[in-house]
Image (tube, rainbow, N blue to C red; front, side):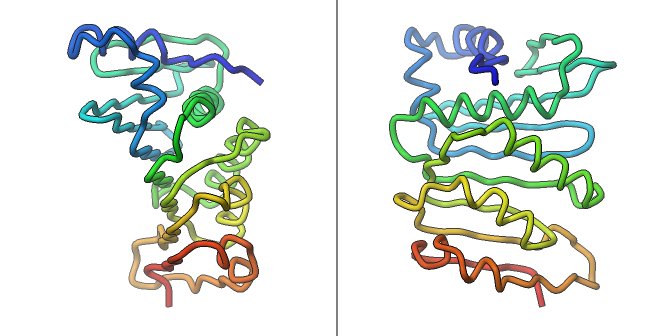
Length: 199
């Protein structure tokens, strides 16, 4: 699996032009928040690094992937946009010096459950053995199976808070069964586990 950061040169250009940083590596390795929004049309990754806010978007373009960071962009031919986005996410987590305080993983409510499930499968495949060192993990979902897939990658030594939110924003909300989540080590180790928006 690739260890390359596909959006690296775009971010370098942005850091140079906006902030004039000399040591980009320190920016990448001291992230305080990661926000990921996944849709069938785009993966948007937002990072907060000190007083720097970075936003990277990955789009399908023909058989390839278009990556945008502010006004800069690049195209990768014959590359799936979900795979590229999640490879970059793995790279970010792998180089962190400290646990990331906040990691939010969101899905578009209009996308079908099979797309969400497929996206999670691609994410897990690209994470491989990477452990996600985070203090607060937030995820929206519509079944506990999706949550259990990603919770296996959360480092139990650092997790403090977990928030699970119903991603279906309709009046007729699905009932979330959390019996398997309640049996997990994460449920026992986290200081707070919140389940929001489910009857």
